[in-house]
Amino acid sequence: MTATFDNGRTSSAGHGEVSPGEIVVGVIIGRASEFFDFFVYAIASVIVFPRLVFTHHDPLTGTLLSFAIFALAFVARPFGTALFMAVDRTHGRGAKMTSALVLLGTSTVAIAFLPGYDDIGVAAIWLLALARIGQGLALGGTWDGLASLLALNAPEGRRGWYAMLPQLGAPVGLIVASALFAFFVGNLSAEDFFDWGWRYPFFVAFAINVVALFSRLRMVQTPSYRQIYEQQELQPSRVLPTLRAEGKNVVIGAFVPLVSFAMFHMVTVFPLSWVFLFTREGPARFLVIEAISAVFGLFAIVASGILADRIGRRRLLGGSAIAIAAFSGFAPQLLDAGFAGELTFMILGFILLGLAFGQSSGSVASRFSRAYRYTGSAITTDLAWLFGAGFAPLVALILSSQFGLIASGAYLLSGALVTMLVLWLTNVSDRGKA
Image (cartoon, rainbow, N blue to C red):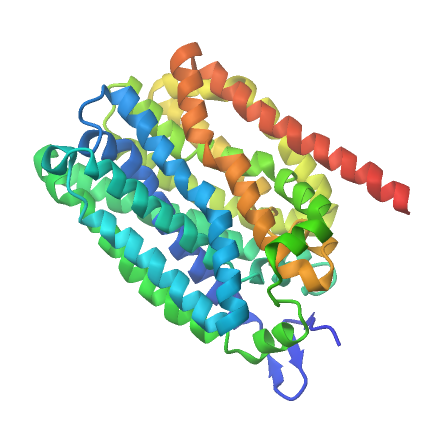
Protein backbone atom coordinates (compact mmCIF):
# COMPACT_ATOMS: atom_id res chain seq x y z
CA MET A 1 0.00 0.00 0.00
CA THR A 2 1.26 3.47 -0.86
CA ALA A 3 0.58 6.36 1.47
CA THR A 4 -1.23 9.14 -0.40
CA PHE A 5 -2.83 12.40 0.54
CA ASP A 6 -6.52 12.27 -0.20
CA ASN A 7 -8.46 15.52 0.04
CA GLY A 8 -6.00 16.85 2.58
CA ARG A 9 -5.86 13.65 4.68
CA THR A 10 -3.45 10.74 4.90
CA SER A 11 -4.89 7.29 5.31
CA SER A 12 -2.85 5.16 7.66
CA ALA A 13 -4.00 1.63 8.27
CA GLY A 14 -4.26 0.96 11.94
CA HIS A 15 -3.79 4.59 12.87
CA GLY A 16 -6.95 6.27 11.58
CA GLU A 17 -6.89 9.31 9.34
CA VAL A 18 -4.26 11.98 9.95
CA SER A 19 -4.18 15.38 8.29
CA PRO A 20 -0.86 16.19 6.60
CA GLY A 21 -1.11 19.67 8.12
CA GLU A 22 1.14 18.66 11.03
CA ILE A 23 3.81 17.46 8.66
CA VAL A 24 3.56 20.62 6.54
CA VAL A 25 3.87 22.90 9.59
CA GLY A 26 6.76 20.85 10.94
CA VAL A 27 8.60 20.99 7.63
CA ILE A 28 8.12 24.76 7.28
CA ILE A 29 9.30 25.39 10.85
CA GLY A 30 12.32 23.17 10.33
CA ARG A 31 13.26 24.77 7.04
CA ALA A 32 12.72 28.29 8.40
CA SER A 33 15.06 27.57 11.32
CA GLU A 34 17.73 26.19 8.98
CA PHE A 35 17.49 29.18 6.64
CA PHE A 36 17.52 31.62 9.55
CA ASP A 37 20.81 30.06 10.69
CA PHE A 38 22.02 30.23 7.11
CA PHE A 39 21.19 33.91 6.60
CA VAL A 40 22.47 35.00 10.01
CA TYR A 41 25.83 33.54 9.07
CA ALA A 42 25.64 34.88 5.50
CA ILE A 43 24.97 38.45 6.65
CA ALA A 44 27.73 38.25 9.24
CA SER A 45 30.13 36.93 6.59
CA VAL A 46 29.72 40.27 4.78
CA ILE A 47 29.53 42.88 7.52
CA VAL A 48 31.20 41.24 10.55
CA PHE A 49 33.78 38.55 9.83
CA PRO A 50 35.97 40.54 7.41
CA ARG A 51 36.49 43.07 10.21
CA LEU A 52 36.53 40.61 13.11
CA VAL A 53 38.82 37.82 11.86
CA PHE A 54 40.41 39.23 8.68
CA THR A 55 41.49 42.61 10.02
CA HIS A 56 44.96 42.22 8.47
CA HIS A 57 43.46 42.29 4.96
CA ASP A 58 41.76 45.03 2.94
CA PRO A 59 37.92 44.90 2.99
CA LEU A 60 37.57 43.17 -0.41
CA THR A 61 40.15 40.49 0.33
CA GLY A 62 38.70 39.99 3.80
CA THR A 63 35.23 39.48 2.33
CA LEU A 64 36.55 37.02 -0.25
CA LEU A 65 38.26 35.02 2.49
CA SER A 66 35.06 35.16 4.52
CA PHE A 67 33.13 33.79 1.53
CA ALA A 68 35.69 30.97 1.22
CA ILE A 69 34.89 29.92 4.79
CA PHE A 70 31.18 30.39 4.00
CA ALA A 71 31.54 27.73 1.28
CA LEU A 72 32.96 25.15 3.71
CA ALA A 73 29.47 24.25 4.96
CA PHE A 74 28.41 23.23 1.46
CA VAL A 75 31.53 21.08 1.04
CA ALA A 76 30.92 19.44 4.42
CA ARG A 77 27.22 18.82 3.89
CA PRO A 78 27.49 15.59 1.81
CA PHE A 79 29.80 14.14 4.47
CA GLY A 80 27.21 15.06 7.08
CA THR A 81 24.60 13.18 5.09
CA ALA A 82 26.76 10.04 5.03
CA LEU A 83 27.54 10.34 8.75
CA PHE A 84 23.99 10.88 9.94
CA MET A 85 22.52 8.28 7.58
CA ALA A 86 24.68 5.81 9.50
CA VAL A 87 23.25 7.17 12.77
CA ASP A 88 19.75 6.77 11.32
CA ARG A 89 20.35 3.15 10.33
CA THR A 90 21.87 2.27 13.70
CA HIS A 91 19.91 4.32 16.22
CA GLY A 92 16.80 5.57 14.41
CA ARG A 93 15.37 8.79 13.02
CA GLY A 94 14.89 10.49 16.39
CA ALA A 95 18.56 10.02 17.33
CA LYS A 96 19.62 11.32 13.94
CA MET A 97 17.50 14.47 14.12
CA THR A 98 18.43 15.18 17.73
CA SER A 99 22.19 14.79 17.23
CA ALA A 100 22.16 16.80 13.99
CA LEU A 101 20.17 19.69 15.44
CA VAL A 102 22.28 19.71 18.60
CA LEU A 103 25.40 19.96 16.42
CA LEU A 104 23.79 22.72 14.36
CA GLY A 105 22.78 24.68 17.45
CA THR A 106 26.16 24.20 19.13
CA SER A 107 28.09 25.26 16.02
CA THR A 108 25.86 28.31 15.60
CA VAL A 109 25.98 29.52 19.19
CA ALA A 110 29.75 28.94 19.28
CA ILE A 111 30.12 31.64 16.64
CA ALA A 112 28.40 34.08 19.00
CA PHE A 113 31.35 33.67 21.41
CA LEU A 114 34.03 33.90 18.70
CA PRO A 115 37.00 36.10 19.70
CA GLY A 116 38.50 38.40 17.10
CA TYR A 117 41.84 38.20 15.33
CA ASP A 118 43.16 40.96 17.56
CA ASP A 119 42.44 38.75 20.59
CA ILE A 120 43.75 35.31 19.58
CA GLY A 121 45.34 35.81 16.18
CA VAL A 122 44.98 33.22 13.42
CA ALA A 123 43.16 30.87 15.83
CA ALA A 124 40.04 33.01 15.27
CA ILE A 125 40.04 32.00 11.60
CA TRP A 126 40.42 28.32 12.43
CA LEU A 127 37.65 28.45 15.02
CA LEU A 128 35.30 30.15 12.55
CA ALA A 129 36.12 27.54 9.90
CA LEU A 130 35.53 24.72 12.40
CA ALA A 131 32.15 26.12 13.40
CA ARG A 132 31.16 26.52 9.74
CA ILE A 133 32.13 22.92 8.98
CA GLY A 134 30.05 21.85 11.99
CA GLN A 135 27.06 23.71 10.54
CA GLY A 136 27.53 21.98 7.19
CA LEU A 137 27.78 18.50 8.72
CA ALA A 138 24.67 19.19 10.78
CA LEU A 139 22.67 20.42 7.78
CA GLY A 140 23.38 17.11 6.09
CA GLY A 141 21.89 15.38 9.11
CA THR A 142 18.76 17.52 9.34
CA TRP A 143 17.47 16.15 6.01
CA ASP A 144 14.10 14.52 6.73
CA GLY A 145 12.96 13.73 3.18
CA LEU A 146 9.49 15.11 3.73
CA ALA A 147 9.85 17.97 1.25
CA SER A 148 10.13 15.45 -1.58
CA LEU A 149 7.54 13.11 -0.12
CA LEU A 150 4.97 15.87 0.25
CA ALA A 151 5.20 16.40 -3.50
CA LEU A 152 5.17 12.70 -4.35
CA ASN A 153 2.22 11.84 -2.10
CA ALA A 154 0.13 14.92 -2.85
CA PRO A 155 -3.34 14.61 -4.39
CA GLU A 156 -3.36 14.38 -8.17
CA GLY A 157 -3.11 17.84 -9.68
CA ARG A 158 -1.69 19.44 -6.52
CA ARG A 159 1.89 18.20 -6.48
CA GLY A 160 3.24 21.62 -7.36
CA TRP A 161 1.40 23.13 -4.41
CA TYR A 162 2.75 20.59 -1.93
CA ALA A 163 6.29 20.84 -3.37
CA MET A 164 6.16 24.60 -2.79
CA LEU A 165 5.22 24.51 0.90
CA PRO A 166 8.62 23.57 2.41
CA GLN A 167 10.34 26.27 0.34
CA LEU A 168 8.46 28.97 2.24
CA GLY A 169 11.00 28.54 5.01
CA ALA A 170 13.67 30.32 2.94
CA PRO A 171 12.05 33.78 2.66
CA VAL A 172 10.74 33.53 6.22
CA GLY A 173 14.26 32.87 7.49
CA LEU A 174 15.69 35.72 5.42
CA ILE A 175 13.06 38.23 6.50
CA VAL A 176 13.68 37.57 10.20
CA ALA A 177 17.47 37.50 9.86
CA SER A 178 17.63 40.69 7.76
CA ALA A 179 15.25 42.56 10.04
CA LEU A 180 17.18 41.50 13.14
CA PHE A 181 20.54 42.59 11.76
CA ALA A 182 19.04 45.82 10.37
CA PHE A 183 17.75 46.65 13.85
CA PHE A 184 21.13 46.18 15.52
CA VAL A 185 23.12 47.87 12.75
CA GLY A 186 20.72 50.81 12.63
CA ASN A 187 20.40 51.38 16.38
CA LEU A 188 23.87 50.69 17.76
CA SER A 189 27.09 52.56 17.37
CA ALA A 190 29.69 50.84 15.19
CA GLU A 191 31.76 50.12 18.28
CA ASP A 192 28.88 48.46 20.13
CA PHE A 193 27.70 46.53 17.09
CA PHE A 194 31.11 45.00 16.37
CA ASP A 195 31.74 44.40 20.05
CA TRP A 196 28.50 42.61 21.05
CA GLY A 197 25.52 43.57 18.88
CA TRP A 198 26.26 41.19 16.00
CA ARG A 199 26.33 38.24 18.41
CA TYR A 200 22.65 38.43 19.41
CA PRO A 201 21.24 37.00 16.14
CA PHE A 202 23.33 33.86 16.72
CA PHE A 203 21.80 33.45 20.18
CA VAL A 204 18.36 33.83 18.60
CA ALA A 205 19.31 31.19 16.03
CA PHE A 206 20.18 28.78 18.84
CA ALA A 207 16.80 29.38 20.51
CA ILE A 208 14.96 28.79 17.23
CA ASN A 209 16.88 25.55 16.76
CA VAL A 210 15.57 24.32 20.10
CA VAL A 211 11.98 25.00 18.98
CA ALA A 212 12.67 23.30 15.64
CA LEU A 213 14.11 20.27 17.42
CA PHE A 214 10.94 19.62 19.41
CA SER A 215 8.76 20.33 16.37
CA ARG A 216 10.64 17.81 14.26
CA LEU A 217 10.77 15.18 16.97
CA ARG A 218 7.00 15.47 17.31
CA MET A 219 6.67 15.23 13.53
CA VAL A 220 8.59 11.95 13.23
CA GLN A 221 6.20 10.39 15.74
CA THR A 222 3.10 11.10 13.64
CA PRO A 223 1.30 7.99 12.31
CA SER A 224 1.61 9.21 8.72
CA TYR A 225 5.38 9.59 9.06
CA ARG A 226 5.74 6.13 10.63
CA GLN A 227 3.61 4.58 7.91
CA ILE A 228 5.71 6.04 5.12
CA TYR A 229 8.87 5.02 7.00
CA GLU A 230 7.63 1.43 7.30
CA GLN A 231 6.90 1.36 3.57
CA GLN A 232 10.60 2.19 2.91
CA GLU A 233 9.82 5.62 1.46
CA LEU A 234 11.98 7.11 4.26
CA GLN A 235 14.41 4.24 4.83
CA PRO A 236 18.08 5.28 4.77
CA SER A 237 20.39 3.35 2.45
CA ARG A 238 24.17 3.41 2.29
CA VAL A 239 25.64 6.23 0.20
CA LEU A 240 27.92 4.25 -2.12
CA PRO A 241 25.28 1.65 -3.12
CA THR A 242 22.85 4.51 -3.69
CA LEU A 243 25.28 6.25 -6.00
CA ARG A 244 25.98 3.04 -7.89
CA ALA A 245 22.28 2.36 -8.38
CA GLU A 246 21.01 5.91 -8.88
CA GLY A 247 24.06 7.91 -9.98
CA LYS A 248 22.43 9.19 -13.17
CA ASN A 249 19.35 10.42 -11.33
CA VAL A 250 21.51 12.07 -8.66
CA VAL A 251 23.36 14.03 -11.36
CA ILE A 252 20.10 15.04 -13.04
CA GLY A 253 18.61 16.08 -9.73
CA ALA A 254 21.67 18.14 -8.82
CA PHE A 255 21.73 20.12 -12.08
CA VAL A 256 18.05 20.55 -12.97
CA PRO A 257 17.54 23.20 -10.25
CA LEU A 258 21.05 24.67 -10.65
CA VAL A 259 19.81 28.07 -11.78
CA SER A 260 17.50 28.44 -8.77
CA PHE A 261 20.33 27.68 -6.33
CA ALA A 262 22.71 30.03 -8.14
CA MET A 263 20.04 32.71 -8.17
CA PHE A 264 19.52 32.14 -4.45
CA HIS A 265 22.86 33.69 -3.52
CA MET A 266 22.86 36.20 -6.35
CA VAL A 267 19.93 38.02 -4.75
CA THR A 268 20.75 37.44 -1.08
CA VAL A 269 24.45 37.31 -0.19
CA PHE A 270 26.22 38.80 -3.21
CA PRO A 271 24.21 42.07 -3.50
CA LEU A 272 24.81 42.87 0.16
CA SER A 273 28.56 42.40 -0.32
CA TRP A 274 28.63 44.62 -3.42
CA VAL A 275 26.62 47.42 -1.84
CA PHE A 276 28.64 47.22 1.38
CA LEU A 277 32.01 47.29 -0.40
CA PHE A 278 31.47 49.46 -3.47
CA THR A 279 28.86 52.05 -2.52
CA ARG A 280 28.58 54.59 0.25
CA GLU A 281 25.39 53.02 1.52
CA GLY A 282 25.38 51.46 4.97
CA PRO A 283 24.14 47.90 5.42
CA ALA A 284 21.00 48.76 7.43
CA ARG A 285 19.03 50.21 4.53
CA PHE A 286 19.94 47.41 2.15
CA LEU A 287 19.00 44.79 4.74
CA VAL A 288 15.56 46.40 4.88
CA ILE A 289 15.40 46.21 1.06
CA GLU A 290 16.26 42.50 1.31
CA ALA A 291 13.50 41.88 3.84
CA ILE A 292 10.91 43.71 1.72
CA SER A 293 12.01 41.90 -1.44
CA ALA A 294 11.86 38.54 0.35
CA VAL A 295 8.12 39.15 0.88
CA PHE A 296 7.74 39.29 -2.91
CA GLY A 297 9.77 36.08 -3.08
CA LEU A 298 7.42 34.42 -0.61
CA PHE A 299 4.38 35.22 -2.75
CA ALA A 300 6.28 34.07 -5.86
CA ILE A 301 6.92 30.70 -4.20
CA VAL A 302 3.18 30.38 -3.54
CA ALA A 303 2.51 31.30 -7.18
CA SER A 304 4.98 28.62 -8.30
CA GLY A 305 2.78 25.98 -6.70
CA ILE A 306 -0.28 27.21 -8.58
CA LEU A 307 1.56 27.56 -11.90
CA ALA A 308 3.27 24.17 -11.63
CA ASP A 309 -0.09 22.47 -11.19
CA ARG A 310 -1.48 24.29 -14.21
CA ILE A 311 1.38 24.14 -16.72
CA GLY A 312 3.67 21.47 -15.25
CA ARG A 313 6.85 21.68 -13.18
CA ARG A 314 9.18 21.10 -16.14
CA ARG A 315 7.68 24.00 -18.09
CA LEU A 316 7.83 26.26 -15.07
CA LEU A 317 11.47 25.40 -14.36
CA GLY A 318 12.35 25.88 -18.03
CA GLY A 319 10.48 29.17 -18.26
CA SER A 320 12.08 30.39 -15.04
CA ALA A 321 15.53 29.51 -16.37
CA ILE A 322 14.86 31.51 -19.55
CA ALA A 323 13.60 34.47 -17.52
CA ILE A 324 16.65 34.34 -15.23
CA ALA A 325 18.92 34.18 -18.27
CA ALA A 326 17.31 37.40 -19.54
CA PHE A 327 17.56 38.92 -16.05
CA SER A 328 21.29 38.16 -15.92
CA GLY A 329 21.92 40.28 -18.99
CA PHE A 330 20.85 43.64 -17.54
CA ALA A 331 19.81 43.42 -13.90
CA PRO A 332 23.18 43.23 -12.05
CA GLN A 333 24.06 46.72 -13.26
CA LEU A 334 21.05 48.02 -11.33
CA LEU A 335 23.04 47.54 -8.12
CA ASP A 336 25.03 50.62 -9.15
CA ALA A 337 21.89 52.67 -9.86
CA GLY A 338 21.12 53.88 -6.34
CA PHE A 339 18.11 53.07 -4.20
CA ALA A 340 15.65 52.68 -7.09
CA GLY A 341 18.01 50.39 -8.98
CA GLU A 342 18.74 48.26 -5.93
CA LEU A 343 15.06 47.90 -5.09
CA THR A 344 14.21 46.99 -8.70
CA PHE A 345 17.00 44.40 -8.85
CA MET A 346 16.00 42.81 -5.56
CA ILE A 347 12.24 42.65 -6.20
CA LEU A 348 12.62 41.28 -9.73
CA GLY A 349 15.29 38.88 -8.54
CA PHE A 350 13.22 37.53 -5.67
CA ILE A 351 10.17 37.06 -7.87
CA LEU A 352 12.20 34.99 -10.34
CA LEU A 353 13.91 33.15 -7.50
CA GLY A 354 10.57 32.29 -5.93
CA LEU A 355 9.17 30.88 -9.16
CA ALA A 356 12.24 28.69 -9.71
CA PHE A 357 13.14 27.80 -6.13
CA GLY A 358 9.54 27.02 -5.24
CA GLN A 359 9.65 23.87 -7.38
CA SER A 360 13.25 22.79 -6.76
CA SER A 361 12.14 20.58 -3.85
CA GLY A 362 11.52 17.01 -4.92
CA SER A 363 11.80 17.91 -8.60
CA VAL A 364 13.24 14.49 -9.49
CA ALA A 365 12.48 12.40 -6.38
CA SER A 366 10.01 10.36 -8.40
CA ARG A 367 12.93 9.09 -10.53
CA PHE A 368 14.47 7.23 -7.60
CA SER A 369 13.44 3.68 -6.78
CA ARG A 370 11.76 3.33 -3.40
CA ALA A 371 14.75 1.64 -1.75
CA TYR A 372 17.08 4.53 -2.60
CA ARG A 373 14.66 7.47 -2.65
CA TYR A 374 15.42 8.86 0.81
CA THR A 375 19.22 8.82 0.60
CA GLY A 376 19.23 9.64 -3.11
CA SER A 377 17.13 12.75 -2.54
CA ALA A 378 19.43 13.83 0.31
CA ILE A 379 22.59 13.45 -1.76
CA THR A 380 20.93 15.24 -4.67
CA THR A 381 20.04 18.19 -2.46
CA ASP A 382 23.58 18.36 -1.07
CA LEU A 383 25.14 18.43 -4.52
CA ALA A 384 22.63 20.96 -5.85
CA TRP A 385 23.55 23.35 -3.03
CA LEU A 386 27.28 22.67 -3.48
CA PHE A 387 27.43 23.20 -7.24
CA GLY A 388 24.72 25.83 -7.51
CA ALA A 389 25.16 27.95 -4.41
CA GLY A 390 28.20 27.03 -2.35
CA PHE A 391 30.75 29.14 -4.20
CA ALA A 392 28.34 31.60 -5.86
CA PRO A 393 29.05 34.62 -3.59
CA LEU A 394 32.80 34.06 -3.82
CA VAL A 395 32.89 33.62 -7.61
CA ALA A 396 30.42 36.45 -8.26
CA LEU A 397 32.36 38.90 -6.09
CA ILE A 398 35.70 37.95 -7.68
CA LEU A 399 34.29 38.38 -11.19
CA SER A 400 32.42 41.61 -10.50
CA SER A 401 35.32 43.21 -8.63
CA GLN A 402 37.65 42.44 -11.56
CA PHE A 403 35.39 42.89 -14.58
CA GLY A 404 32.32 44.78 -13.36
CA LEU A 405 28.82 43.70 -12.45
CA ILE A 406 28.12 42.36 -15.93
CA ALA A 407 30.53 39.50 -15.14
CA SER A 408 28.36 38.35 -12.24
CA GLY A 409 25.48 38.28 -14.70
CA ALA A 410 27.51 35.97 -16.94
CA TYR A 411 28.00 33.63 -14.00
CA LEU A 412 24.25 33.54 -13.39
CA LEU A 413 23.65 32.99 -17.10
CA SER A 414 25.85 29.89 -17.00
CA GLY A 415 23.60 28.38 -14.33
CA ALA A 416 20.50 29.10 -16.42
CA LEU A 417 22.06 27.47 -19.48
CA VAL A 418 22.97 24.34 -17.49
CA THR A 419 19.41 24.01 -16.19
CA MET A 420 17.93 24.43 -19.69
CA LEU A 421 20.38 21.89 -21.11
CA VAL A 422 19.63 19.25 -18.46
CA LEU A 423 15.87 19.79 -18.82
CA TRP A 424 16.20 19.31 -22.59
CA LEU A 425 18.34 16.17 -22.20
CA THR A 426 15.96 14.60 -19.68
CA ASN A 427 13.01 15.43 -21.92
CA VAL A 428 14.71 13.70 -24.86
CA SER A 429 15.58 10.74 -22.64
CA ASP A 430 12.04 10.44 -21.32
CA ARG A 431 10.61 10.55 -24.86
CA GLY A 432 13.02 7.82 -25.90
CA LYS A 433 11.68 5.57 -23.15
CA ALA A 434 8.06 6.23 -24.03
